[in-house]
Length: 517
Image 1 (cartoon, helix red, strand yellow):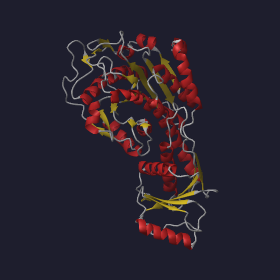
Image 2: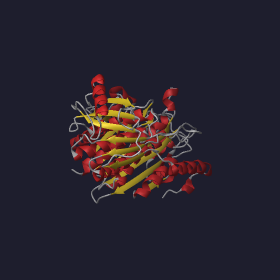
Image 3: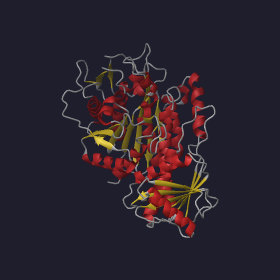
Image 4: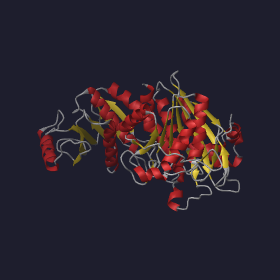
């Protein structure tokens, strides 16, 4: 098994610094509590208001408060629609500094993701104020199950929006540090549901952290050790195959992408055995920086973003952390091929031929189509060594996908309707939505003149998917092309700027849904 002794001494110092900062980092400075009573010393009161309430009010409010609220509701045409918001400063008859009415629409019809967006909107609004202690009062949502589900989803949205990637600032700006107190109808039910969502949020934070890491910090060995530090305390079995073991296993397709870099290929394996069922395999592309190789990326804006090319593997780490943190009764293996696509005298050349773990020979027609080369061996390894019930691979794979769907959806490819249906369900639940693109017929799309197959073809998104399908063999399989979904320039919804952690929530929910079938 791979050990730290195989890493050059010059790299051990940077790796040690990364692990030290990982171990001590706290993603959130906010606190969250739930109670069936109102909090004390609250400076901001947030009242969740279902649609159709003409005069929303809490018991104990005097006429001055009720009259001001009634006039405000009328003047602003506040009707309690989901994500509608009205703020009243120094409200009459109350001791709080601000009263914020937040619409939740019809509680029966409010989707979880929409409730999370309400929380994200609230966090963004609160962060622009001097608020220190915030009570979110859900007393007007009478049904106990809906009360807990909506408040915990809102709390989850607040958490997701308040993440910051600030490890490289010499003097980082203060993180949001408010105390959030949620008044609910059942403290125990809300706390149970929130703890599950907090484990999911932690998975998203780790995926964002790994995606955001610059190439010189998040290289294959460092990525693998970060994952070990996160996952092993949660009960996940972590195995790291180093470069020599990758070669010994015959994974020439994975190894070749990194052969021009000082940071050679690794294969990261993470196994959560929450049940004795046949395992499910999640395979994530972990190209930790992508220059394009000798098919060099020539756009400075594009190449500056290429630390995000490991977002697929980051999503798998995040999903494994979430599933283990939730103590989910599933048997799932995460397989993350890790590489760094660099240029040197040892780098593979356009037209080279490599041999994958299953013996397939591949013409490297374009060194910038490297993601499918490393995923080929990751998918094969999952199939060969774990006999999974299904394989899902996820990757920032093709610009063609961005051209087809933009960043509102990821593209999915499969011939298995049960996997597709459950993936769509998970996407609607989490907001990580998916859209199916066709796999065929595209006869001869990846035929090669000099090898079994080549790593390019047209149309591009389909060529990548068909290439990967070859290595899944007879195992039920679905490919997620999440190009364009991994990074945003400006805060939006549940995401601050930077890495989004896209795919973590999708994979976590899909695994739970599919395993329960």
